[in-house]
Image (spheres, rainbow, N blue to C red):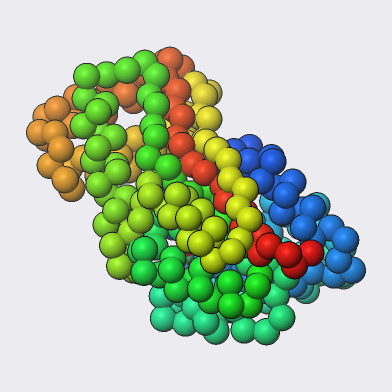
Length: 269
Ligand SMILES: C[S@@+](CC[C@H](N)C(=O)[O-])C[C@H]1O[C@@H](n2cnc3c(N)ncnc32)[C@H](O)[C@@H]1O
């Protein structure tokens, strides 16, 4: 599975759904629930996981603009059938180049999930300024926080976690990525722009029975270790083999830290 493949997004979606912070989600819903209809822009929608997570809790009349630069993912996001009160439009855009076009027109909420850790500080600043200029609420879920717990522990885990976090900061098409700093940066930028910000943890909790998810994550982490030469090849192979054995025997669990953020312009509703 590659970085943003549909298979990977499908594998992670149930963990994302369980992880979404309930208080943050409640605050998002409370901000919209009295509107007769809502217009939402979802940035970097993938196959539409935010739409699926949110739509059932919002007023029936919804207009979603789903934005992504991957046409395959966008096609899947817009293919699903929804009630007649929902209008869903897929818009292919490169958000690094055409962010402002994504925010065109009247919008009640901008959402995103698993995006902010991929973007640079400069792009986040641009996003925050554009959203604040339009006084739109902003919900950014599932921002990787840099905290990883592996159970049971292994002597090489610290080197692996350092490599993951170094990899998180590499350029993903928006300049040097914020990685684990994304949620804190979003909170402080929106507060500085006069927003009231709610945030809370949304960790993936991956149990012994979640073998496919664990194996997929471990393979990605081993790749990051090699990219940063954080362990020798033989130590990386030994670490991965030992971890996979623990997964197969149902003795391994992972917790991967995330943070959800909801920013509401003060004094608007
Ligand atoms: C980690 S996935 C998250 C997808 C979805 N929001 C979710 O939570 O399942 C990141 C998404 O960002 C999209 N993406 C990455 N770079 C982009 C860019 N420059 N413009 C638009 N979308 C981009 C990818 O295609 C992918 O769908």
